[in-house]
Length: 82
Image (tube, rainbow, N blue to C red; front, side):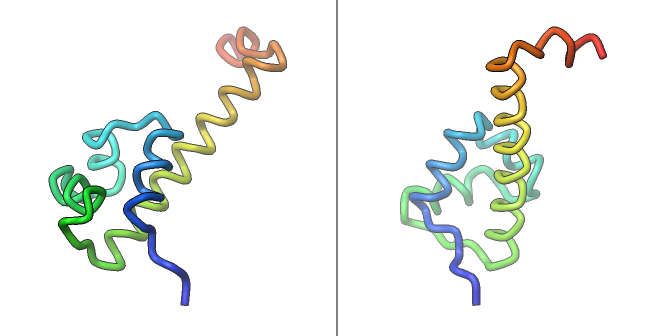
């Protein structure tokens, strides 16, 4: 059985992805208030909610890392034009 997303992981992955809680709410379909409470350790989320949040965060982190890779390799202008 996979390990659920911990509050610390949620915070770290959200920071790395660059998403706000409002953006994550839209992407995962879980209320911002619930995620904030979970991240502070005072609330709980269902396994399906945790899976949706983790999926949205992974998607955002992949997009963010691809953007960084383009910038590092100097292909940002090409990617924006093409």
